[in-house]
Amino acid sequence: KNQVEQSPQSLIILEGKNCTLQCNYTVSPFSNLRWYKQDTGRGPVSLTIMTFSENTKSNGRYTATLDADTKQSSLHITASQLSDSASYICVVSETDSSYKLIFGSGTRLLVRP
Amino acid sequence: DTEVTQTPKHLVMGMTNKKSLKCEQHMGHRAMYWYKQKAKKPPELMFVYSYEKLSINESVPSRFSPECPNSSLLNLHLHALQPEDSALYLCASSPRGHGYGNEQFFGPGTRLTVL
Image (tube, rainbow over all chains, first blue to last red; front, side, top):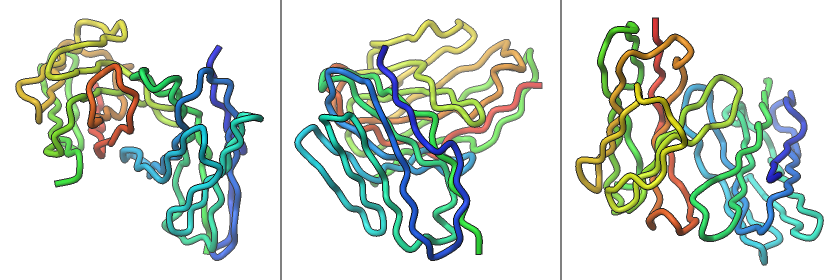
């Protein structure tokens, strides 16, 4: 069964600290993996999208990594800010011909002053 | 214009009401989607429109009725909803039509409460 699992479920860090969120997937065949940020009550906003051949991709203070062999991805947030408090969702596409996104349950991040 | 807009932001309705949710994009995207998201859960796909035609219905109850009047607009008509239908309803669009996996751009959502 195609699944996307994220850890931790929730995380609290102090402002200015770094953190890393994890995503493991069993989706096959794999097309691409995306990380979205979702503020409470708002729609998801894309942070990064990576295909099979990409190992790392950065978007400002966000850096995503992908290991297609172990089917693992991580999202590293550097110098966290209060506005980083949100849910971070890992989403995997099955193949390039699939409309369906397989969502992880997300990691809820709280950044405290 | 590089965003997906949704109206209204919030909607409260009774079980006998008829209401509609609206989604709009002006990015020339050819596929549009409706998702339902309950609190602390990932979004669940409801409908996919590709080139203005309904291509996917994920066994959604008939009290939800989608409509795509043109390539930029997507509506979701609501009738005789149940309290358990209360959720965040998300619209998304993607550049290519259904059958081509490509990045989906999400709107801000409509928070629906059914009393």
